[in-house]
Image (cartoon, rainbow, N blue to C red; front, top):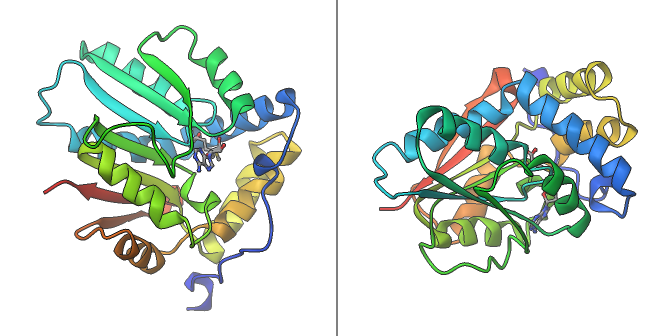
Length: 238
Ligand SMILES: C[S@@+](CC[C@H](N)C(=O)[O-])C[C@H]1O[C@@H](n2cnc3c(N)ncnc32)[C@H](O)[C@@H]1O
């Protein structure tokens, strides 16, 4: 049915988050992203796949890398989760943008287990298998097809157990839902612009399959979560 058919990927429009913006605007936009992650279950998609990946992990502490961490809402959520369960978890939140890390610094101030690092996800400053798991949320679609495989390859390289990449589903229904959600629950103009555009820039499962193949990765799983308008790419080290 046409309604459920994938839309062509948008490659010629930029998100406002990718351009220069004042710190106050970035903060409001990332607050909106965090709220939408929470209300619509995007953050729990990452958390549930990650906890499954780590269920047999015996490292003390476990180490999780978050690539394209934005305002660090997901590391904070994971830190709280670990504290509640009495698990020792160390989180490394990486973002390429210095100002965005400033926003994250405030949000993560009460969580010394979260380290903030300015780095490019395409060239992670970590040794192979340097962390137990790597996650990334709403970041893959920021990368064009020429470089997106490098992000997957880097995450697979540094993660000893596996990785979870969470992004939006690209469909007409997803576009309509995100458009509506950003009108109802996102208050900043950047969020209203970037939310629906992010859907149009997201990759379909088939496209992700070929990005992963170009990264030399086999055996990845793409799990759709249509009610949450998300998909998760899960790679497990053999
Ligand atoms: C929409 S935000 C997602 C924030 C967060 N992961 C979340 O789900 O709330 C995308 C983030 O990816 C970052 N980013 C984009 N490309 C990146 C790259 N190559 N390396 C590191 N960070 C990147 C941006 O700076 C931005 O903070």
